[in-house]
Length: 401
Image 1 (cartoon, one colour):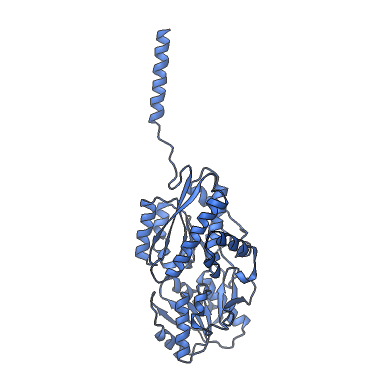
Image 2: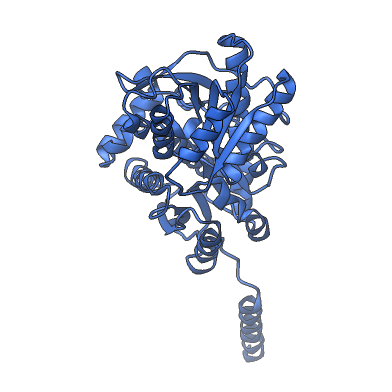
């Protein structure tokens, strides 16, 4: 009997040692039993700081909504950490590395800026970390698709084509002289690329004038485009710069019809007084004035969590909608959350119900969530943007649908 006992004890000890020697189950980075850590980089002190501060407010509102209103996701609360990249591509690489290696975040969400995001495309692929961008518009962000990168914003390439379609087919402009003023980086150059495609289709030449990121004096650009005889002028850049450009045009008596990109659908455009009145913009989001269910839900959530100021920002849905998609994907991914599972879930989202905020759809080979747009007209007196077309795709459509 003693022999059997000794043998049994030896077997138990051997089994315990073998168990202890087995490799431990690997937990996913940024995920614990009670928390999921998300990272983001924002321009908090650079040329687009007004965007970064508003976006950070919306990210914090999302965290409160998920944790307090929804009770978390599968027993876990959301936490976030934000790094300031000053809208600088070099600083963005540093912010990305810090978020991944130091903070060890599970995924990045609500990051923005075409030029900053371009700087980390290879890093995203290498680390294999899910990244959901907003307001990053360069086509190379999603064409060809990157497995771990999801995009939701108005493409400036699409925007230029939509606006030229509108000039030719809706306004019935006869022999228009089209030009473009653009921020001279990936963001602005994508708008130029769209204009090049439209010019080739419709058979016209266009004038162009770029300006450096952070530049405030756009007198030379306005002078150049006026001298070229531009009658219809597209603009790609931030709303305060657009307002300054309009003011310069007014000083020299140059009065073309202006067409702002989606970032200029912003109250800051009215810094130029009544000058924006009657001008147009390309936009892919629902408007608060339309009273759609999605905006009503935002009003409820933002008011509850102290973010009412964001409700005056027409671009708020471009930040909020991806966060709602992320919430849905986290819920659908289940308790056993991994980066790969989240990516698989996100890429299978189709016809996501935004409540009228804007249409969104992804696929295995489709990382661009927004595909349809409207043209808005600026009412300078009421300080509103009013849709003047239905939802439409650009006449030149890239990729698979």
